[in-house]
Image (cartoon, rainbow, N blue to C red; front, side, top):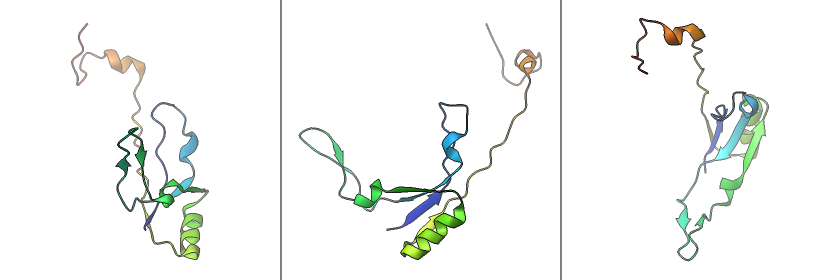
Length: 101
């Protein structure tokens, strides 16, 4: 089973970057999840899917995976592009999107 090492994206519901600083190691699923027919619960027989480890740096996560003999792949974080606009740009006459009342 392959582990994935990544830095999570910022939560869309919050303005801060709280839990997106640390690197996370979690395992990719081996088998698909199944729906239990009586109650409709989603279940899986894969216990490694419940493990989620956090590390301060990418190197710490890679070292842990190597020491434990876990094959892994690293997903690089995408750098965000900051768009600097002022409030008055929303009401500019020559804006790209048309604005109607």
